[in-house]
Length: 319
Image 1 (cartoon, rainbow, N blue to C red):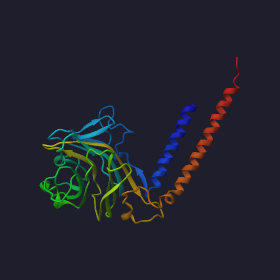
Image 2: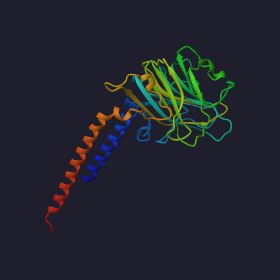
Image 3: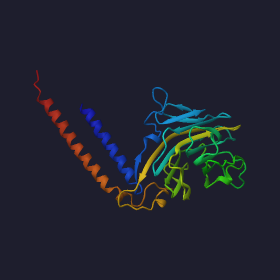
Image 4: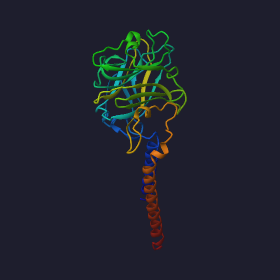
């Protein structure tokens, strides 16, 4: 019983540290959205080999709590995974760890991250449907016809439900912005993308693939408007060339400004290089002190309880 109580205290301590870290980031408070997250702390599938919050299809294979494999390193594969409920948060950030790897010198085609009205529809755009409505971020590893551009290449496209993705030019005419990311395939560190969105204001993408905890800015786009009802998803495809395309984890967080905080959300989303804002410590001070006091109170009660238990044990008659 004492051990269980101590475990509860440790859990509260860990939760307090997590809350403090979330608040001390850049002036915005963050709320974890379980409905749009995939983490190793929670099995990807339940006992019925289903997911409560995600649907997956085509060639997608989920291996316990290790990864979601959208395509294996085999030709002519395609797979997808999509949230079952739309992401309705006004401002949000999505941190996804992924892996693109293979043993070949020639490889392709790539993967995509989606925030669209359509969900779970196989197609020709990195394994998902064309003429989509919403945002597509493409991690293109195979160069078709983009002179002067180094691949792999990451780009964003806003679909209107009618415009086709120009596959033969690697989406040149569809591109809002993009960046080259040589080394993101077969990287020696966990590869991640951090996508931050402030409604109708700003969309930023930063990448981790050179060193751990080093975020490289990819692009920032102003005046982006993602549909208010959009599903989060990921997809990938291979052609004659192939690669393993894996999703390792997804962390989605709702972001909001505390009362009295700055409302300049357009600039607050860019986190390239560092994930801690200059004023992060002051922004979370009130809530941080509250959790410290709660923790001290719980530890005091726990110490008293343990002391009393030991006292009772020593007072028992010995035979």
